Amino acid sequence: MRIGGVSGWLRAAALAEPRGIPLSSHLFPEISAHLLAVTPTCHWLEYIDWASPILAEPVKIEQGHAVISEAPGAGISWNEEAIAKWQL
Image (cartoon, rainbow, N blue to C red; front, side, top):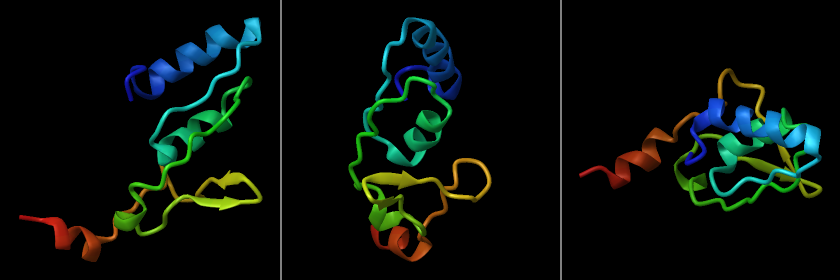
């Protein structure tokens, strides 16, 4: 998020690759898992499931690895019923 979105991440990944610098994410595993999947020097996905209660399909972790959704885009869909509980 603070790196400049997807474009900023890809620029950082391009700079890190020839130098062999490992890249890890910080928060937002729903997006970070996708970004790390296309990062040649990916290192760690920081996984905190804060958004899970409002997601229709939270990030799945299997054998210590994030399973990336096959859904289009970032694969995020909202749990509308859960979100309704928090609306003012």
